[in-house]
Structures are given as structure tokens and as C-alpha cells.
Image (tube, rainbow, N blue to C red):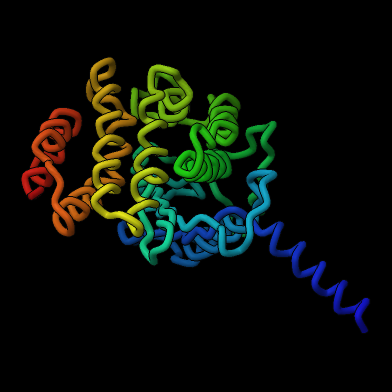
Length: 294
């Protein structure tokens, strides 16, 4: 009896340790498509959901409770003969220590998405080959989600996963828009190459300092946590000096702007005049939000 109990515990532990990294909600919106069988889009959604959540993206051991909460939305704008054109919205969050709050970490809108998909086809990721643009897109953003999440827990903790995403970019050069230098400075190519460049190191420093040093300390000392968050945001001003209007700065504030307003709109007061100046300088697109800080 004891032997069987031990075996069951071992199997249960192994299952937990080998859980996949992502707990991802995948949605396929096709409201604008009126001349196709809706079943193809429903099948695509299920295939993507299974692919993202059942693929082992790293060699790290994740417990089921440690899986990263994230979402991928494919908003289909055109469909013809198994060819899809879409916008892809990718978002992720991570828990804040000693709280029930999930802090948004990533919120990216990729407008250059096109792929082919045959209903019922298997989606399989091979890191050493380009098999389809759909697989490459999902694999790229899966690694980006894991990388940014890791950077919020340890300094430059996401490097291996950024490099995996960079490798996907390298093998996907013929996959369509978004994979090459010629596709603009807000392409997938520049997203991951900028992150790995020393020039953009303040972005990664800010991610760690904001989440691990500031947010994760809020439960113990909210005033100190706010002060640490200001220091983290100031790191993006360092990046702004050498790369004004950097894509990565926008990536940070696309995820964080509402949270920053909420953080500094209640609780213990801290001086925010300098913070407002920094925010208006590095993220002027969110100026209406920064005006709400009190």
C-alpha cells in the first residue's frame, strides 16, 4: 500500500513539475467576415488554444499555479481560400506578492499578421525550422511573454527566452510582414532585437525594478513601494535621452499607464511633480492620463 501511495505521489509531482508555462486564453474574432463558414474560425480558435497551452516552450519546470496568465486575440479582417489577414493582440500579467492583484505586464497590438490555415491541421512548433507563419507568430509571442515575465522576477532573467524569440525571427524572414528590418521600427524584428541591445538596457532594468522592487513590496510598505516605482519609471527617462520615442518605451506604457494612474491616485501621498514631468516627457501620448495624477 505504501509503495502505491509513494508512486502516486511521485506521478502527481512529476505532472505538476512538468506543467506548461502558459495559461493562455485564445480568441478568434471574425465579425467582419460574412461570406465564410463560421466553423473554420471556431476550429482555428480551438487549435490555437490547444497549441499554445499544450506546447512546452522552455526547459523550466512550472507548477500549475505558476503558469503565466495571458491572452492572444486574433481579429480577422480578411479570409479567402484558407488565407487569413488579422490583427493580433497579445497581453499578459503576473501576480503581485501578498495580494490578489494581477499586474499587466505586456499589451502588444501586432497589425501585420497574415497566415494560412487548413481546417483541422496539426500545429507543431520546431525551433529549428520555419513551418508556417501561424506557428511562428504564436511561438514568437509565447517566448516574448515568458521572457518579459522572467525579467520582472530577476534582473535580465528573460534573456534565454528573448534569444529563442530572436531565433524565430531569424528563421521566419520569408514568412511575411513583421519579421524583417524593412517592416518598420515597430516590427517583431525590432521588438526582440531592441530588447537584447545594450542601448535598451534601461527598459529591462525598469521592468525588474518596477515589479520586483516596487510592486512586490507594496503589501509591506505602500509608500516605499510608490517611491521605488518612481525610481523605476525614471530609468525609462534614461532610455528616452538616447532613443526618444523608443518602441520599447511605448510597450511599457501600453501595459502600465492605467496602473500607474491608479497607483498614484490613492493611498499614502508621495511627491509626484517630478514623476509627472518624466511621464509627460517619455510618454506624451498618455498626457491626458498623467494629468489625472494627484
